[in-house]
Amino acid sequence: MKPITARLPAVILLFVAIPLVFSGCKGRSKDQEKSRFRLNLSDEIRTIPLAELLPKTTAKTGKSEKEIGEKVRYDYMYGTLAGQYGNLRTAEKHLKLALAKEPAFTDAHHNLGLAYYKMGRINDAITQWQTVLRLDPAYAETYYNLAIFMLDNKRRADAITLLETCIKHEPYHLKARYALGKMNQEDGKVQEAIRHFRAYQMKDRGDLRVHLALGELYLMANQADSSLKEFESAARIDDKNAQVHYQLGAAYHRRNWLDKAIFEYKRTTELAPDHLDAFVNLGDIYFQRQEFASALAAYNAALGVDSTNTYARRKAGEAEKKLLERDRGS
Image (cartoon, helix red, strand yellow):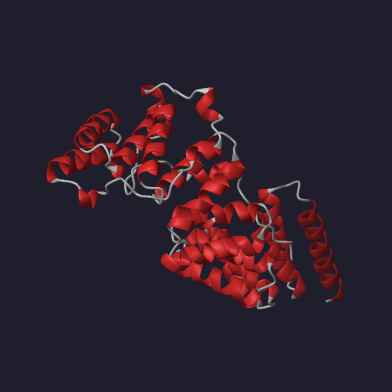
C-alpha cells in the first residue's frame, strides 16, 4: 500500500476560499474590484503594531442594529445589501448616511470597513474597524477581518492572536475556528487543530472540509476508529467527492478490509480518472491477493497517469513476471 500523506495547502490559499464579503452573499471577484479601484495602503497601516488595533477598554459604548431607529436602519440595510451584491459605491453612500444619523452604530462602521477593504481602501477599512472595537471591544467579526488583513500582509503571528481573540468573544465563530484548525494542522499541532475543528462541529456538523481534516488528524494521532468515522461521515455528505472515497478506501485498506477498500478505490477512479494513488493501491491489493492480471491492469493504469512513477513500473514488472510464471506452470 502506498503511504498516504495529507497535502496541506499554503495558509494563504485557505483564505482565498473565505473572501471578505458582507456576510451571507457572494461578492464580485478580486479581479473585477481591482479593475475598478486602486489599492490604498500606507506603510504606516501595513506595519501598524497590533497593540494599536486592540481596544484599550472592555466597556461597550456603541449601538447595535437592535438599538437604532427605522430611518437609520433603512440606510444601513440598503447599504449592506448593496455591498453584498458588489455595488460598493452605493454601499459606502448609504452606510455613511446611517452613520451621519447614528455615529455610534457599530454594525454600520463594520460593514463600511468591509466595503472599503473590497475597494482597496485598506487605510479607511482599518480606521473603521478600529472604531468598531473602540465602540464594542467584543465585536468578534472585526477581529476576524483584522486577522485577514494581517495574513494579507504576511503577519501570521498577529493573525493567530486576532483569531484567538475572535473565538474568545464568540467561541463558535466558524471561520475563525476553521482558520485556526488549518493553521495548527499546517504547523503539526495535531491536538490543537483537533480542538478547533471539534469546536467547529459543535455548531456545524455538515462541513465536508472539517470531516476530512479531522479524519487526517485523528489518523496522525493514532485514533483510527475516530478517523474512520470522520471519513464515513464525509462520504455521507458528498458521495461524488473523489478525495472522500480515496481516504475512506485508505482507511479500510489499513484495516485490511480489502473488499471495501477495492470498492472505494474504484469509486475514486470513476470520479477522478487521474487519481494515481488509488490505482497504485488497487494494484497492491490485487497483488496481495495474487490476482496478478488485475494487479497489472491497475499498475498500468497508474503508469498511464504518470509514466515516471518508479513504484508502479516496478510492481507492474513483478505482476507481469508472476503471470508468465503461472502460464509456464499451467
